[in-house]
Image (cartoon, rainbow, N blue to C red; front, side):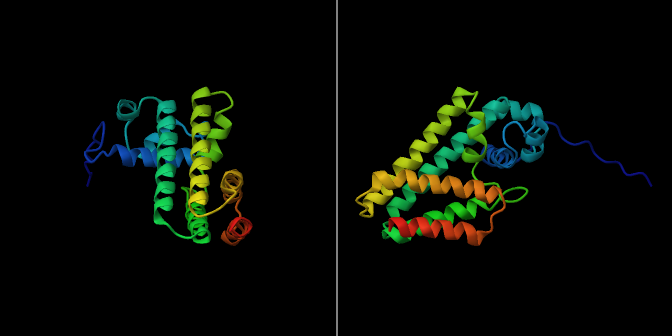
Length: 196
């Protein structure tokens, strides 16, 4: 008996959600980087046909920039939520590092770290727009961490903030290198103890 397989529909799926597609593309970029992610990879990740992908987001670079913007927005909102939670200093830092490490240990093919730290840092060398996004991301981290520390009574918030940011970035690299959770937690705890 011969089965008649209906042809796959062309274009966007009926349930196309731009936010879901952007999340999927962001994950693919986070895992494989800009250069290591092909248009076919993005089609596979998002479930969109190439014409629909172009219509929704533009070319590969535009989609990558949208993924970076998504990350910048999410990080800013995450810090705003943490600042508004009004936890004491140690608990605030513990919650922040737990959230960061939890995220870094996820990924499509294993721990993927942070899209900004892991991918935009290399792309920023020859792409001034990516460099601007990376600088904006670093500024948001430094500013929000300084605000968090200051609101929790840290008299050295401005000095401590870039150190905390540096530790966060190191955790991203270490997660991608396969460091176990216990190692990442120990580094975070050392930073918390130093500041709190």
